[in-house]
Length: 328
Image (tube, rainbow, N blue to C red; front, side):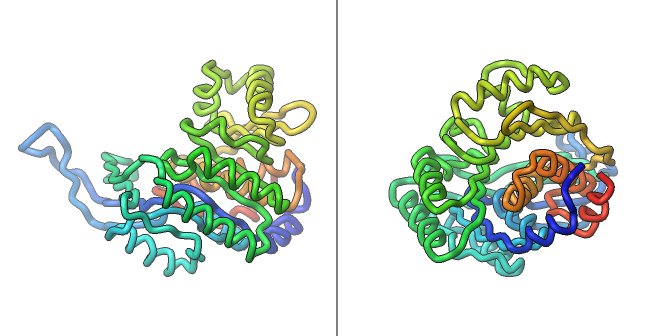
């Protein structure tokens, strides 16, 4: 059973969270398919609406805002039209962007989805994924240091999408800085720098990422297999809490003692895009107020499932989350 829900969410409102990672624009073209193209064997989508949303680490920021905590975003965008649009949308959402760095050598990442009947027909991406150059790396580190020195940060989230921002040197320097300032560190990793997050407080891979990093298949239904994989992971990372998302099989968490697996809540799944952003946001905020593993696992599991009932990348609905959390 989770701890007192009202107290948890009231305490979350007092937290200040620094989100560091890859940002992007999520674009949606929504319409209907009524015919096939005479030019090629592909469907023609008659577009009825278009929408652009903040994605990646920016969606984590939106989730933290929705949960009533205070986020600050640190990230790199391009000096381009999509970068300008990103800043405009961020201002509209009242996101603190003093941690943004504008790159002269990188495109602002955008993911465009064509949707019909609540299903993706096509996605195309515009992005650069090369590592930050030395100047950009130093600018980003300076932004992080400036924020840590001027703000009382409770939790720092690394939101990694393998876009070249969270490189090894950035990770190691920021983890050290956070530890020196008693800031909790929470990680949503990706493959390229999976093993760079040494000594963090909470490490949250999904099952695919865990299996690929360990080069072994891990049965999500077998707690002993998950325990064994977690032991291998911890021996290399020396992290305090391991939290693995298992898709339809729920979540697994382990700190001290035995690992525990929690089943997924039943949902009308429409789109899993952005669910990981919601899970890491919820896990980081709960960790900021309690180290109770069951509370972290159950609330994060619940929040991740809720956003999957909407099409596209959306932040969590707090009222619905609290209402459902009272019964778990």
